[in-house]
Image 1: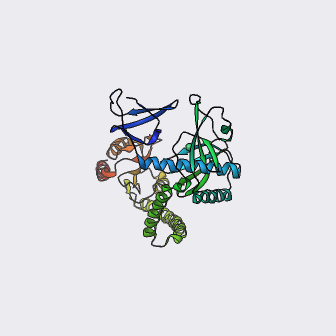
Image 2 (image 1 turned 120 degrees about the vertical axis):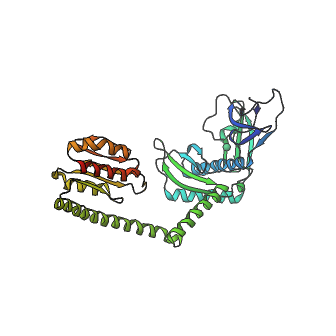
Image 3 (image 1 turned 90 degrees about the vertical axis):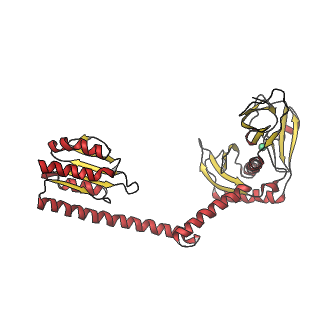
Length: 359
Ligand SMILES: [Zn+2]
């Protein structure tokens, strides 16, 4: 069902309580697509999602202001802009935007917001000399008869069909979030305006509060503390590697001295390096070996190695990989791969034990 409206696309909640799912512009009319039917010829009441509308008004009017300041005062023209769910960006025709430009442009925009300059709309006919003053990124071909121009008092004139605030004080504040490389030598300058500044600050405060509780120290110590923890973790990991490599040697020596029929080695906390080191150290022994470890973050899953004389591998390999839901294949007499379910490990132990009791 379609009805015509001058209203803008993305913030119409419903028509006669029927949900609007999409709005497309066609010429100077907007096509509304609704979830349910509407009676042909009926007069409809349109409900605007005001929270969303006002948010879009703030972000979009803020973009007019930011683009005007960047172009007029810093020679940085805007080639497009993007309104995201959490933040927005303007795409600037420049490879890089210096940090001091970002700081100064933000201060300038906030200064103009404090002045509460009027934002007015005027309608001009094609060919009106006033249009020479107005800025555009190109008009759609099907929308040329009456041109709508948005004027920020003394700052900017811009052809636009969007929704805008009535004066700059309604923007409250603008915060520039940083510049990133964009497409083909352009730069994306990220920003939020108005209520989004408050929402963003609130989310940051919640994250900061969570970190303060975890790190048990004030926010200005967070960076230092995390760096310290990362450094300590690196040292601990290195120490663990050394201990595991010594332990691997102990296991190897034990097998060489006791000469068992087979090796079953399951250490939950073993690393794949540990298991490989044990295998390598015992390669020449002609011994059937089964080694397994658990994934540290997914204890149900693990890593397994099966290696040894072909007759034993043939007799046990398939049953073991089935019990542990192993993913992988025997290659050059060796199975090395992931186990999808370590729950079968005790059955596996029993299977190997019984097999070697018989042979
Ligand atoms: Zn606009």
